[in-house]
Length: 472
Image (cartoon, rainbow, N blue to C red; front, side, top):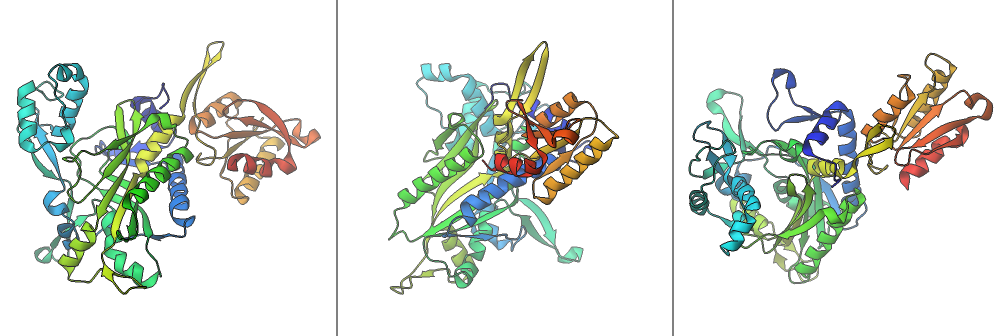
């Protein structure tokens, strides 16, 4: 994380420069709901495409899927979401405001480490039952953020319910998916029947999930709808060492964050405790990023065993076993699942790239030093003077970049300094200016975002020059 980055600064910049807007703002908005503007959409899509290329297209043991958001509701009964996809809800007795009980306890523990150390108490918040949370809150007198007494914690299911059917009297309850993983398990049999896959193999998917969150805030880190980039990697537990596969996915996942430009010093691995870990998981690790509001999860890797396929086989009555082509043996493959949050990855990229620089003589600039491959706009083209032949030449060059598949932006607001500052805040790595010397020397001025150095490049070479720079 850049030492200068804060959630407030990032969210302000994101709105001011068209990355992220509060959703339905003209009606007062909806907490934890956001719209992605042009630059935010481009950045998010670039991150998504990098993930898809690394983990699906570039691998021979992977295939892709885009599953339905609304599926047969028995899916969520079988997966355990209807019965156990719960958070601990707790209320402020005065304001009636609702909070996640575990988050309130975590915040208190973080601020009172020395007190707990004196008492020789090791607190595993994630593994606490509702009764244990209630006892802890009472013992230490934990209050709501408003300073008021709290109710007892109770279960709160995160699944969004909706109704399916034409007539009101015939409608049935269905759910918006709480995770993308189940769609992969539902299509597993179709995939092995049509794609000629051999174990081990994986299925990758990018798509939206929905969770009725108690805790609001933290900008796009925690939202009602979000995008997951998820893999279910199937293998024969008799032939493959799950620990080796698990470690490989940990390293591959870390490499993905390297490609995003995330400093490994700002990442940490956190293993789930026995109490915190899901009952079907033999091991779960999170990769957390150091935000200014603490280390928070970007990705989770879990060894799910054969739990999901077994549950769906039992509830559906369909045989989901894999047949070994050599021995004819039928068995349920085991699964390792790396699940990455796309929105959270984008937020981490913004944090990592954010800089405030002193240029001397009382001048400063804010700049997003996003890797050129990920930057929303690769190059901006300016005419040094508006309403002149320079402007027409700049427009023509802008079109050349676009025809070459390089995302370009034309700007003729007139003040070169302001145009540079705007592109700095968008994260555009290169700016090209058509000036009065272009007609005589057939060259343009290229300005580098990170160093602010300028050089003259021949017009005939400029498209390839930028292409090479961006791809480095």
